[in-house]
Amino acid sequence: MDKIKVGIIGSGFIAEHHCYSYNINPHAEIVGMSSLLEEEAKVLMKKFDIPGKLYKDYKDLLKLECDAISICLPNFLHKEVTIDVLNSGSHALIEKPLARTIAEGEKMLDAEKSSNRKIFYCENNMYAPTFVKVKEIIDEGGIGKIYMGRGKEQHSGPHSEWFYKKDKAGGGALIDLGIHDIACLVWYLGCDVKEVFCQIKTIMPDRGKFGKCDVEDNAVGILYFENDAQVIIEESWTAPGGYDMRFELFGTDGQIKAAPTNNNLINVYSEKGYGYAVEKASTTAGWTFPIPEEAWNFGYPQEIKHFLECIMNNKNPMTDGKYGQKILQIVETMYKSAETRKIEEI
Image 1: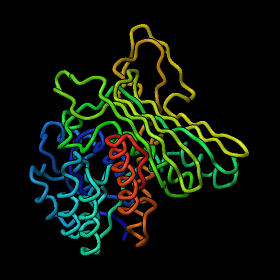
Image 2 (image 1 turned 60 degrees about the horizontal axis):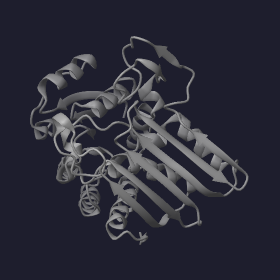
Image 3 (image 1 turned 90 degrees about the horizontal axis):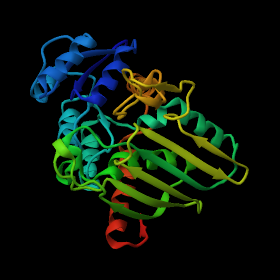
């Protein structure tokens, strides 16, 4: 198989990263796009030279018999669209979270099994160069046995209304940002989480043009791992200044600190500001830390490359549907802990 024929469902921020990643891969050919947002989608189609007409109904895209389809849609559509994609004979690349609930995720995994197609779970941070290096150092024994750590993601909040509605998103900052941290931490430590404790709150219930925020915009949790490590995660949608993510891991023989969004070779101070620095940065005036080749540094092309190689060689991916379901189960248990105000077992 020289070329993997792929389709894109959705046309937002993540869809652009997928288009870019396919576009620079010699083994991929984007054959079509589906989106309800016509103007937004046509910009992407022109930018990445995607042929054919825009499909308003994604089921018309499925008729193109793609080898794989990227599903870049709101959380409440993940289950239905993924099942339809799998049953059409295409592999499904699904962005995090796998679904809103583990019950929805289970139905997706059932469809994967019955269709004989694969779910590729898109957790870009596990393919990002900085975090791949962190994993390499851990696996080489560089810091010994990890006993404590911290994962953190924050920004000022998403740019779409559906994120702030529980029926559409399934949750707030925890399922949106925390799911990234948890996925990486389980990967880093190489063992499962046995118990969790979590507290959530909403600091900014009024989100202006997006209306009321009826999910948590801040979350703090503790993951208790099977190797007795205790790791704190902190997630926020109320932190201005752009996207900030970092890990601190402490082992018996050393420590690692990684913060790719605020730790690169470019520091800029501008009185007037300039074009673009990093995701979610509302201004570029003052001190900024622009990210060169943002998609590459956040792991999107590497992730897509890995998935395409798995399809071509009939191999299982590093992040499959079962991995996405495992991480979602941890998140769901953390929401339970936030309700009971107790440590809960996974």
